[in-house]
Amino acid sequence: MSVEIFSEDSISPSEATNGLMLPDVKASMAARPARLKARTDKFYEILPQSAKLSQTDTARAKAVARELLKNLEDDWNFGDLKNYMSEENYLSLRSCAEQSASAENP
Image (cartoon, one colour):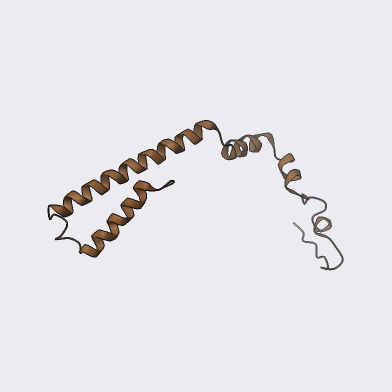
């Protein structure tokens, strides 16, 4: 393997790479091999199915946060948590659970 030395002011990047440098994103996308194209397209493609999964996941996360909030309140009111955390920590945790239960995107 040999390394060529070029002076900074005498060449452009494409000359230094013997024309192997791609000039822009379009050229890069067009130059992808078919196997790589299939994998990257699959990764970046947004389909209605993936949007539905996201909505389902959001609804599930909100339901879990509401259940956590209910359990926190019950445990605090019955005194179970008072032995393990201060009221300040409880209120902070409760606030986080409330934000998650009402957030657009948890």
